[in-house]
Length: 256
Image (cartoon, rainbow, N blue to C red; front, side):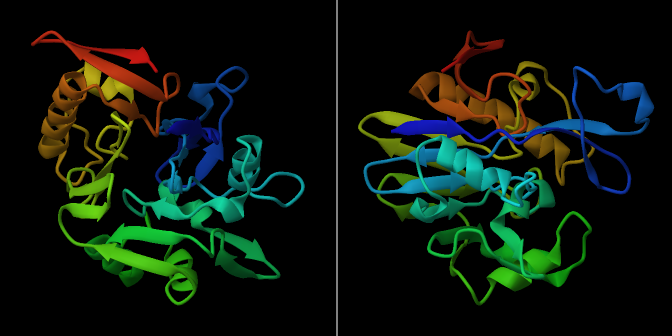
C-alpha cells in the first residue's frame, strides 16, 4: 500500500467562509484579523485493487486552468482517470471542492469513472443547502453523473475498507480504515485533522459536537497506538502521515 499527500497549501478563513491563500513565510497573520488558518491535504492511496482519493480539497486551479488536485495525482505517477474510489469523510467545501471542475461554463465531475462514497445523511444535508459550509452546486453536478454509494452508519465497503459514522465534527461525518497485507491506514477527516489536536485536549467550537469530537480523537489515538495504524492528517501543517505512541497519559506522533 502506497500513500501520497496531495498538499494544496495554506489558507485563511474568515467569517465569510472564503478560503484565501496564505503563505506562512511571506504573509502576516495580523493582516487577517478574525481568521482561522488551515492547511489542506487530500490523500491518494494505491492498493492492489484500487487507487483511492480521500477527500478532494478545495478544487483550485493552476495558471494552466488545471486542477491542482489533478496535477498532484499526475506528480504521484498516476492519471486522474486512474482513481477508482473517492472516499469522503464529509462534504464541507474545503473537503469537497475538488469533486468537480469548471469546464465551458459548467461544473463537471473531476473523477467521472470513480465510485464516490458518502454518508447518506451528509449527502442529503448538503443537497438541502441549509449551510454555507456546503456548496450545493457541487452536489447537483454530481448527483446524476457519478456512481454514488451512500453509506449508513458503520460497515464494510469492500474487503479491506471499513467506515464508521463518527458524528463529531458534523452530524454525518465518517472515518475510514484501510487494511492490506497487515498494514492499516486510518483517515479521520476532521475528527483527527492534525497531530496537535491529539497532543492537547480541547473542545473546538466549530465542531457539531465538540466534546464527542475530543473523545473520538483520544479513542482513535489509543487505537492507532495499539494497532500500529498510520494516520492521515488532512489539516496538518507539518506531519501529514504519522504513527501514534501512547504511554497511558500522553500521545506522541512520529512521521511515517
